[in-house]
Image (spheres, rainbow, N blue to C red):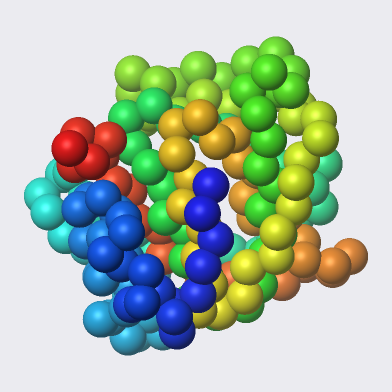
Length: 159
């Protein structure tokens, strides 16, 4: 997992693999507030693309942890704030949904020992296939409206 700010990421870009760098460059060159909710923005065909969503955060107990195998997530907050928990695969409960073949996602019934970070507008987190993450959680004890840009980066682009 990597956490950062779009304000300072340009200083770090040279340290990232090409695929992640392209995803982050998309985030720093786009007016995130103006991106259309529900739209998919191709960056490099189906290897790197961005999806824009808007939702209300929920209590962490209502959110299921998940991980991916083929894609890295770059989750960037365009507006609002949310907590995201991160944990190790060995600390997850039983699998509740195995959709790796259909949509590259495994969801777990529970995750113990989450390490939570709060992302605000202009901050992002990078989740690799070995990072189990529980997104869209309330940053405090109340729901918050969030606009998020999720950049999906194929593991194939890291070479």
